Amino acid sequence: MNLFFKKKLRSFKVLLLLLLTAFTLHSKAAKVDTVNTHSAAMNKTIKAVVILPDAYNKQQRYSTVYLLHGYSGNYADYIKKIPALKNYADTYNLIMVCADGNYSSWYFDSPEDSKWKYETYVSKELVNYIDAHYQTLADRKNRAITGLSMGGHGALSIAIKHQDVFGAAGSMSGGLDLRPFPANWDISQRLGAYAQYPQRWKENSVTEMVPLLATLKLALIIDCGKNDFFYQVNKEFHEKLLYYNIPHDFISRPGDHNWAYWSNSITYQLLYFKNFFDGKAL
Image (cartoon, rainbow, N blue to C red):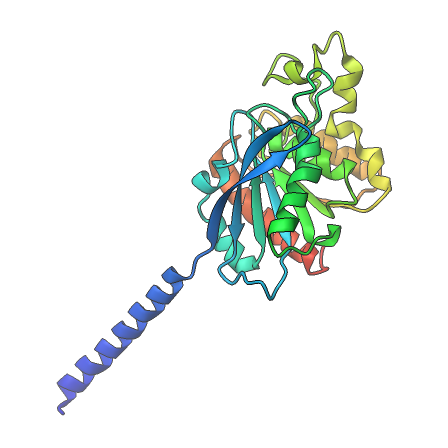
């Protein structure tokens, strides 16, 4: 065989190896389920997206991250807007659950309308469903929750109130204080008018829940862009955590209230949670 054909054969083998590698990587992918869960508190069926790592099997148990969407969104937002979540599930070998917050629930149990009990749903009913149907590590050391915008507020609120359920929590561009926005995003439909029920608005604003963090330690990561209309309330929340000497990570960089920012932000959040699950973050 002459030198020319030897080089051609070598090149062909390299190309074949690259193609096989690419095929193998492409064929390994997280599994995405859409499931119907039941809420006894609201007497209805609620959908959720569950992302399982490619390596998922019944001989192993997995940590779980819950993701809460923003105002006007739904359970399918994350997987549609950030399809790379499937890769992250594989990279970190964890389960992700994209919950539904019914457009504008703000993820609390509404004192104004008893049909809206999304704090109960996420913190108890959804968690119980996931633990019953998937191979989870069913303890606070292996559960985290985060969200964007309305979901950022919901994630921190639920985690702070239910520290026995979640060990880590995050927020991306979260509306962490409701009071500066009395006419926005259907909050008044969930809490009643601010002028009439200021105490409700205070009690349901995450920034007023900081003293509750003295009970158990939550691993916390907060992220908000400097051009975001929620930047000021995030900065104030960060400063209040500092005042109370509550450990947390606070990230701020140029960015707006949009999916471009959250697609970047989620990478930091998931790395932080993975470190928490591995005992490296608090």
